[in-house]
Length: 292
Picture 1 (cartoon, helix red, strand yellow):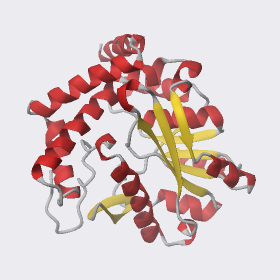
Picture 2 (cartoon, one colour):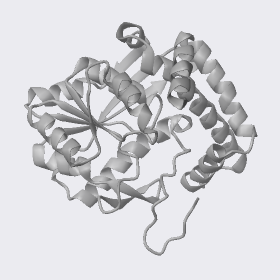
Picture 3 (cartoon, one colour):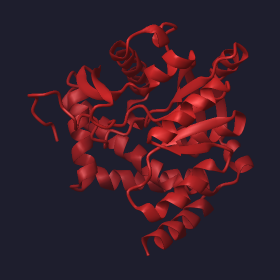
Picture 4 (cartoon, one colour):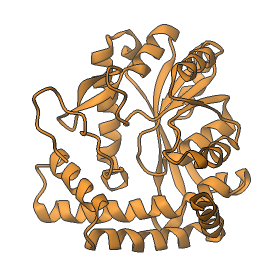
């Protein structure tokens, strides 16, 4: 029943022009900002942790704007999962830095794209996979019945999706050794034992080391990618930023620090478009108190 409901809702949202979807999304986000709910509560905690220097009123405005962007993320899913390639790609109004990937592949190295939960992160995978041979690491949805729907939507531009298990990691190595590209969400909490604590906005965040190991063993270039959501449903501006040149040669702990610094810089450029409702600091160092 829930799968049928999701499919019906996606079909309905896909009918909406993007400006209309974003307008409704803003209204939904405004409701999240004024009514008690867990999304607002978690976002407020994260913003207080990451922006302690902001005046309370300024931080409250940022919280409201963030939740309005969260609403846009929800309501643009019809476009992200159901629009055909031509129609969706037409919403990409600018692309900055994708030539970095071309240069890396000309040198015979693969590319690791890390796409944090910033802006329209679904757009990044769809755009890159339409341009380059791409293998994407993904975490299956909690509702198993939705897996086929999510996989087919995200793979429809040519991406090869692999699960977050040993077989999926092997597929990433294989793709990079064939000078292809891989996509990873870098700001999810990894499984215990597969990460290290590295500062994110000055707060210890349990951070994956997979990207560092992939880069070290294959010589691949690490590139951060995100899709900035433009005002009034105008479309998206895709940004690509290369990690420091010594990323692959550093130890995993220092590489995690460098990766979080790269993500933080992008978030600081567009703080309202980051997914602050995620419990990024759920896993705490030994002896540290919980924050949620």
